[in-house]
Figure 1 (cartoon, one colour):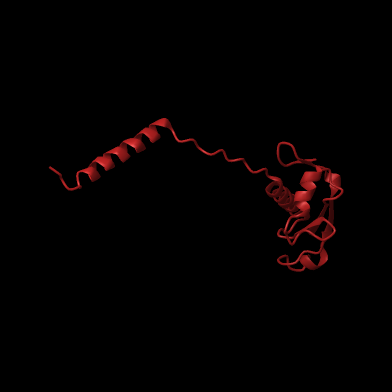
Figure 2 (cartoon, helix red, strand yellow):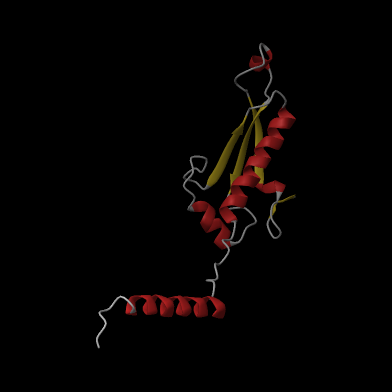
Length: 137
């Protein structure tokens, strides 16, 4: 089990990984050894709440297939183990960002001192404007 947040646990049985041929650096090794990782995470069969599954299925991401499977291809490193860890880290990051609960904003209340200052400034401004009027005898 891999722990993401306080309350979300990903069962490693929900994650399917298979080795693929990696592209890029590696010389002759790149054509012979399967060092890349293809990670598949099926949202519909995952051990998540229905609300979390809906959030993930509504995700607008190219890594999400029409069948509800998140596919992550990791081939940045030369070893299979590093690519496996990289794929799991990227899956955790995707799930954390998607399932993060937004903090509810509480509007700030204006203090009594601020209200008093505002009224005092208004009265001072009013007195200044009163002095600009024509004087009547």
